[in-house]
Image (cartoon, rainbow, N blue to C red; front, side):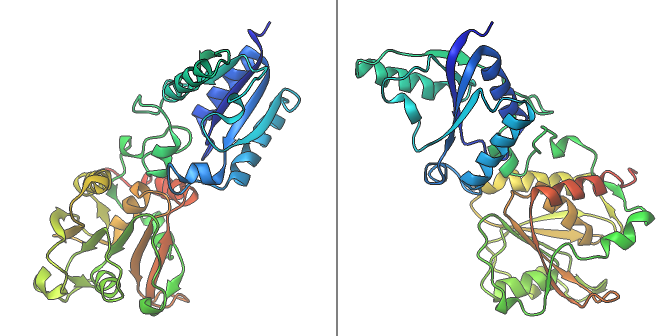
Length: 334
């Protein structure tokens, strides 16, 4: 027998993940009926970026209700503030929250008490944890750290030698190829990264300063520059060096990329990764994997078969991250 007749569970429900399912499962296990509050686009945008539209988030919740045969027990409402339907008299008996959202429930009860409305019970659902034992959250997914199931990219071996079986596949561009970057200056909402000397120079000349740039002083495997100053890159980049042999990814280079993305939110300058004793080409893969969703990665593409040379523009998505993760797991550890 359910504990309550009617409860509510609210949130943004962006990138519907394991933690969201756990919250809703708990709500339906404790109540006959559940009001599910989904934040409006305006309310959601006040807090974060790269959040899916309300229509998309609502559609996923509807699919959850249908899959679990809960459509008659669940009602979806749009909320434009933390109160939703709780700023007036209501038949709702409890708020189903997590440890992270409990403070909002306390604020709501304090407000209701001050306005002579009965307070509601606070029912706390357990958190879903990722591989690193920290909670799964939409923010961590958007930041590029984890996927919706709680897989933490940095907890896996993502380095080693490039297997022959992947060489042909990795010759194919990961995004559209353009000829002239000046005709396609993108407004990067997330992070912008350039891989390659020519790509970095062309981006800066076009008015795009990468948050992270990767160079090795070589162009198509031939030494073109003697030192970094010849690239005409402003000195306000913080330079870090790493060794990365051709046809491979080192543990040092992969972990450095992960570290730099973690530091971007608190950095005082952009980063220039100088690859010494090796090549930068394959660093594109861990860069895509660790980059926040919505980021853009630029790299040069030599003419291969039917593919012309030019600049490849890669938009970082969850689907692409999943593909890159599977590719990196096939590298042969040394």
